[in-house]
Image (cartoon, rainbow, N blue to C red; front, top):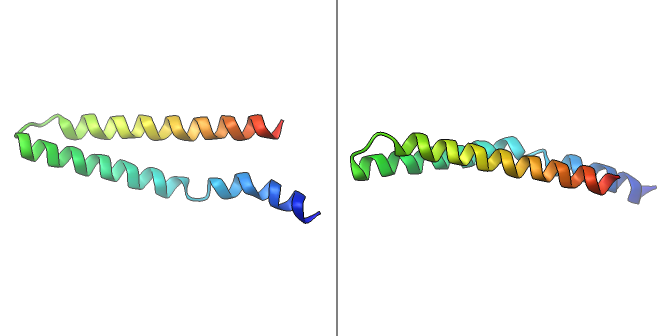
Length: 73
């Protein structure tokens, strides 16, 4: 019985920190883009880097959800 409880909790435990990971990654992408804008005296790198990190984070979350749902079937 304990094995079954651990197995059913595992997918939930994987996603407990997803919001913090995504927030941190988006913040780092924004910070890096801001640094690039300051270094090269431009105005577009912050937006590009932030959007890139948002799409990358969403892709990783969706792929993890699909993998977990496939493993549970």
